[in-house]
Image 1 (cartoon, rainbow, N blue to C red):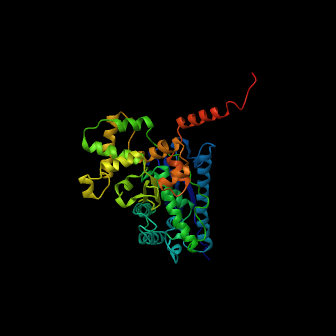
Image 2 (cartoon, rainbow, N blue to C red):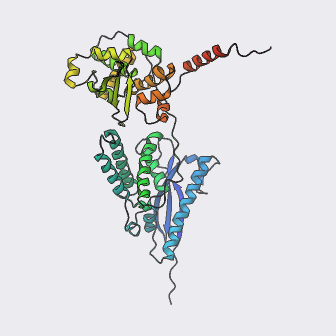
Image 3 (cartoon, helix red, strand yellow):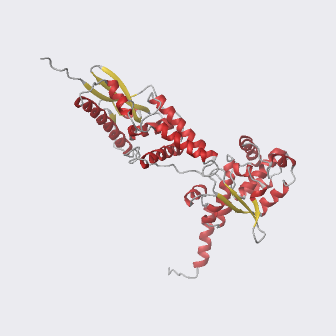
Amino acid sequence: MMTKKRNTFNVVCLIRKNRVMKNGQVPLFMRTTVNSNVVDIPIAGSVNPSQWSQAQGKTRGNSREAQELNYNIQSVKSRIHQIFCDLGLAGKPITAQIIKDIYLGNHKDEEEDGKTLVEVHSEHNERCRQLLNIEYSQSTIYKFDTSLKYLKEFMDKELDRKDIPLKNINEDFIRKYELYLKTEKGCANNSAIKHLKIFKKIIRIALLNDWLHKDPFASIKFRQDEVHVEFLTMNELQTLINKEISIKRLSQIRDVFVFCSFTGLAFVDVKNLKEEHIIKNSDEEIWIRKPREKTNNMCNIPLLNIPKMLLEKYKDDRGCQLKGQLLPVPTNQKYNTYLKEIANLCGINKRLTAHVARHTFATEICLSQGVPIESVSRMLGHRDLRSTRIYAKITNHKIAEDMEALEERIKDKFQVVV
């Protein structure tokens, strides 16, 4: 009687020295060998080559990042070993390629019945398209489509597949996708997180419909970087307003920027501002009441004198009338290009963009002058105060003014014996 030949098996973690990323780190992979047949399995994570111990198959050091990476390496090793053992116990053929396919969710046995990621994501995007301008803006739908596109590109390039069953998505898949977004697509941390949150939304839909029974995002926490908000100070804004500009196109762009600095409107909203959005209340006060193009949230903005004067200035402008606009707003590209010229003319050493005006309104015009954050949030058309806090930073000047006012109030209430 012949004895069944035993399979030899080995798995070791290696680094790809020839694929150095922008941050100087290199990606990891698992070299899996079965009976002298070898395959390389990409895994999530990267490491500085100088910190890598090839003898131990892990990174050196005791930092939290090093410990998390080494834990992930060991988890992947254990998963690959478990696949090898499960195939043996089930009496199924065992090859290095089969192990790789099962690990990556690319094995035929794993794909029978059940929804797939691209299928559910595509259905979600189509439903949102049907709700265009009802619940979703065009820009939001564009983000959903871009995220689906990135997922498809990731699976095609990194996993050599077009789709994946939902039940085969695990934390390692998500971590590899995150790495792909940051390295191959050049996404900054916060941009990558936006795509991952859309991905998480698709997973949540799958969980609610019982297409998936375990949340692969359960142990993943997003850590967003603090956003630096650029805005103009009162002195810089006054310099820009007072500057004599003889070039008509730059003078007009300056007017649009100033209008946004005193209303908080985003570029797309001022471009699409119509007569119907200008209303008078019962006290004859003039307001802008307009849903934001980005979110469809309503902006309610009482007009200050400067934006009133600018609307009056362009009331009979032929160019605005032909375009159906209240102000001479060009394309976004031209707008930002002209703003750079204006910044140079005014000696403002900041990168002026359309959104700097919105930030200036929130920070310098409103919050620094004591307007409550709840009112600012309503005028900006934000869903919650968290969004407003990102846009609006209290300046040191405002803090100093508040403390001076406090000093005045309490100076006669306390005495210190020296």
